[in-house]
Amino acid sequence: MIHTGEKPFVCETCGKAFTYRSHLQRHNTIHTGEKPFVCETCGKAFTQQAHRNTHSTIHTGEKPFVCETCGKAFTQQGSLTLHSRVHSGEKPFVCETCGKAFTQQGSLDLHSRVHTGEKPFICDTCGKAFTRQVSLDLHGRVHTGEKPFICETCGKAFIRQTHLNRHKRVHTGEKPFVCETCGKAFTHQCSLNRHEKVHTGEKPFICETCGKAFTQQGNLRKHSRVHTGEKPFVCETCGKAFTQQAHRNTHSRVHNCEKLFVCETCGKAFTLQTELDRHGRVHTGEKPFVCDTCGKAFTQRTRLNNHKSVHTGEKPFVCETCGKAFTRQGNLGLHTRVHTGEKPFLCETCGKAFTQRTHLNSHKSVHTGEKPFVCETCGKAFARQGKLNDHVRVHTGEKPFKFEICGKALTHQSNLHIHKRVNTSEKLFAYATC
Image (cartoon, rainbow, N blue to C red):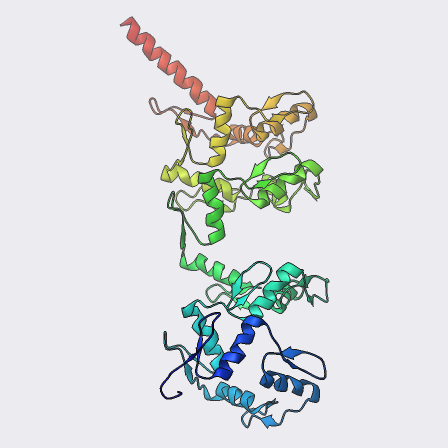
């Protein structure tokens, strides 16, 4: 039968065929879970006698088979034969489907399941199937909660040894995965893979609705909620919903009023380090995010991203009530309150309500008298950054608001609106007189 290739002994459970009845009987133990061969020393059970015999050498410590090349010793001749292929490079077991070669028959058998789809190891709890027994054993810990691999430094426990090894780098600072392009190092291979797309520009994950492309699947999932309106992360205190878990976590600090990060310049406190870093730029004037198209700089990346739509003209977010379009989902959300009349941000001091949190924050300075934005030239202080920006033009002479009809330039947007009305009414009056 070896020469004819005939395999008359077929497994009734999964259909796999064998040349010998003994091989079928051995295979059946995969499905039955039977382990009739027990180690007399420690009681561990095995499906095959050969496996039990191999295991028993753990207790005796005997390793009579030594590699002539490197001196490594083994308990079995078979193990030495397999090991010798490390030096010779021999891979005698070849996949008939794809041609991939392996050093061991067992590795080929596992690989063949990629093509057949066979998953003979099934979880009794949830029914999930696996190609390997070891994968099923690892999965079982999801249900049992077993985490046998414990970090000696902090006590955190893990399901897998590999997860523990990865975690240890938090304490050691080891970053073994280095980008060949820029030299930046990472603790995980997946982090390096993600980073490399910065250099290649690869964005394989594309939104089917608007065509926007992303470097990561997770970012595409987050983005898709812009179109679906899905907000799966809900604040347990007030019920407010968010598209991202990080946003919900940040919001939750509003309720516990935890503000651990304090500005050394003005004493203002923040719930997040990133918020403090962002605020610090008010005092330093740093604007690290620069537009590639026009060179305009911004204190925050989100503001740069919003600004880019000025060049593209893209306005994908449309109001269903009046048809007005916006570059950002957030701006559309703010705009809808024009129609609904909603003013969710309430001043605790006087009860005045506002459509936007920023308006409420600006209003609060009426009660506190706080003016954190100080002119470096004359020392005049303002409650709002926008007012300081307007004031600075008194010193610089900048007049960025230009009337297209007459070419007159003005320092403030409001002055431009007034000037437009005056000119328009004068022309209408002149036309009526004629």
